[in-house]
Image (tube, rainbow, N blue to C red; front, top):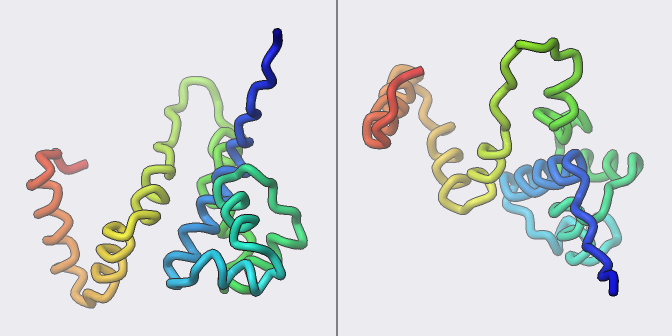
Length: 140
C-alpha cells in the first residue's frame, strides 16, 4: 500500500513566504489584515508564508505594494540566487534563513526595532561587541 507523501514546499517559495512574513511582522500587520487587503482569508496568507502555496506574480506585486517594498525584496538571499554563477571551490554564502527566523520571533523583531532606533553607530558597534562576548563568539 503506497501512501501519498506530502510534497515539501519549494525552497524558493518557502523563502519568499518567510520574507512576506518578516516584512508583515516588521510593519506590525496581522495575517488577517494582509488577507483583507488582498481579498483572501488569513489561512491563505498563512499558506503563502509557509511556502505551502506558491505566490503568483501579480499577487506578489500586490503584496509588495501593501507591504511597501519592491518585489525584489522577497527574493533577497533566495536559495537559487545564492548558487547562480558559483564556481567550484568557492565557499557557499551563509544562509540568511537564520536572519528571517530570528526576525519572525517577537524578541528578534523587538530587538531589531530597538537597535535600529540607536543613532550612535559607535554605540551600536559596542552593543554588538557586548552580545558577541556574552555569546562567547570570536569576532569575525
